Image 1: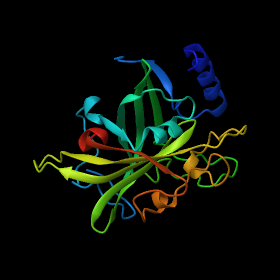
Image 2 (image 1 turned 180 degrees about the horizontal axis):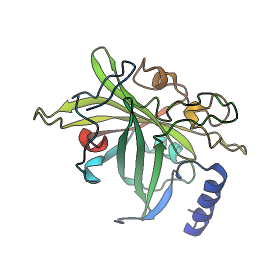
Image 3 (image 1 turned 45 degrees about the vertical axis):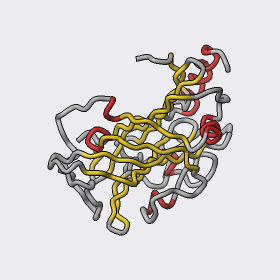
Length: 252
């Protein structure tokens, strides 16, 4: 494994070049411490408000993440070989961006050889800039991050990215606790797609799901059109999760 200082230098260089997201493998010391809906977009399953002054704990937004295999997780990490990884976690922190869409972040972390690694993937709450005649000006950055219904069942799919690739968060099961407070738990999966190696820089004006060709294209028609739950288009299943508090991760 590379020395910590070397990794830090690499990450700083990546930030300055690419200007997006956070590194997939940021190294930390282990053990450190009512929806307004438009365009026919369904509200969340229990129909509760997405705005609240009540804060929720970080732990209620975090759950165990179960990789499909260590080999697949190693392909996702890509930047260094895994030795004996453990303590896989997912943290989801989303906020209403308006019009039934959700911005925020998804963090994937694990511990390996005495260090904790964390990848933070993000989707912003703003809109695409109208600059250089680029496509999709004025669309929300989180345009495709929303609930939808197939065969009378609610699902949620959303794009997020860091400097090295993209993930799709899939929520395919929701269990309401039946306490009239809108509390419940969600489960689902994460799919990933690493960017191809390239000397070209990603445009700072568009997230990868608005890039139509080249090494930074992370589009998936199933996520964009909401006609299927799981992405294709080169995405690979990374793992599953369960027991995330719906109220906590959507900041209700």
